[in-house]
Image 1 (spheres, one colour):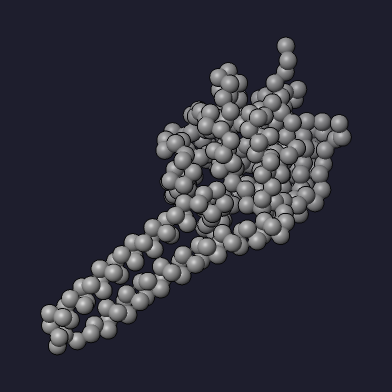
Image 2 (cartoon, helix red, strand yellow; image 1 turned 90 degrees about the horizontal axis):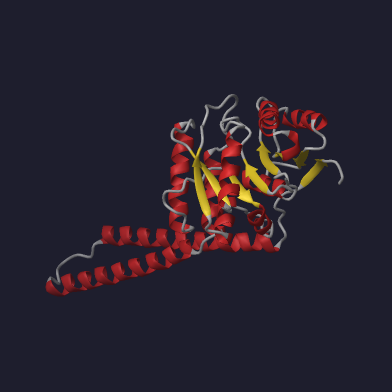
Length: 311
């Protein structure tokens, strides 16, 4: 019987206290013959590099360690790991032990038994802090609006993809990847499996407000033209509003010639319209800037060193 190889891509950011326990748990749960682990150190500032090197020495034939030159972000790190994943099914999971190793089989079995391209995890109770949960809800709402994501689908970072989907995702070479957006580009064959979600064992989430904004911009600007369409609608709406207000002002002046000109209302209208114009110009500038960076060959990631046995 042919062995199904599972590749697990784990972006590591300040995960020195948890990555060892996670990798050992994965090998104990799945077995070394069926497992390939790809660790991607995304510019960690703790001892993650040393911890990953120790794991590579312990599992030199089943583990690949990719050390990036700096912090590129979670989705860029995942893209780096996908380029070294050789399994029939590829699982992406975080390094914080909130997803237990035994949950991997639940996702893979769903994808394998039902021949599904992508299986997302879902949680009955999420153990993130309130800020991370709020950011996740907002991200899911934006994705439903911009990317045609099914509304009941939760975009978990813990998911399983088929070989076909990963090969398609790797064709994207732009500097601003968004894994879920790339998934929706190539398949709608998606399922969901409920898995446990444990409390964070050590450290804290690497997602700051700045990184969440960066993630939202990647989603909105790189994978949808909807913001430009909304800008056009806003322009039409405020132009129509300005026309109506102009007619009202002229009518009032004709009816009552002694009526003084309303300077406060003019200033308010000027500020509103100027704000809308600047917002739309900034949005267009964001699109143009990303096109410039892409044409300028801004790297998706830079590998400083890779630890892997040649095959």
